[in-house]
Length: 287
Image 1 (cartoon, rainbow, N blue to C red):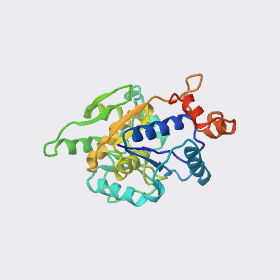
Image 2 (spheres, rainbow, N blue to C red):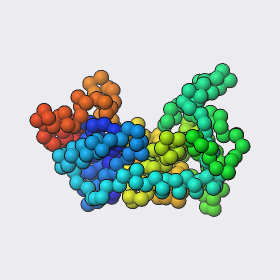
Image 3 (tube, rainbow, N blue to C red):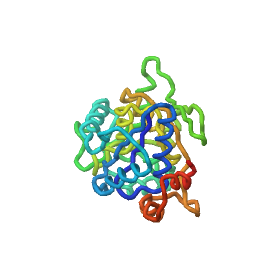
């Protein structure tokens, strides 16, 4: 078993991160496997070296170990571009100039009814999908996956089988089949390259998990719906599909999910107050 913890260096790690990291670490070591660390720093406008250093310090204090060097997404941009070029050459991407306001306006137009929400917010209504193709993406545009075309390509493969993944988390432990019609309705044409990054979370995490030979992806239930995107990309890019384990989120006393801006529950805050690593394990229910 190979698991990973993949934080972004955009703020302090909190109790939710501690839970995710410890769980992935313990699962790997209990099976005689390996726990890996990955730094997801594609958002260079928010990533800070000081936060990356704090990640290493907090995780080491918790007693976690991992092999080095650590994979950093900012070092892998050429590989993400190569994957995009491959998908573009197959006619599976198109440029999109819409911003969030444009998408919200189009999706809430009277003829559209109530907009559907997917893993990345409002499901894209396809405004730019029918703009004539260009030989290269336009400047300052995002790139979206033409989901209908991508699913059709997979459907016509020799010996094509349904898309599916195995989930072992307690909320939905079973084999999940991805229905194309439901994917189009509830996910749609997802962004694979943001104009300010040249890639996206969905593309990068899919490529990185394969590059690190991750066999079990452990992450919060908030990312469960995104798994179908990653499985689709794995098939399009001829990558293996790992087993997924989506765990419950750590929340505050009001039931609100913890965020990096919540410094009161940062690991560093508990450390400064005298907590031990065992105290942190106890706080998140892993003692």
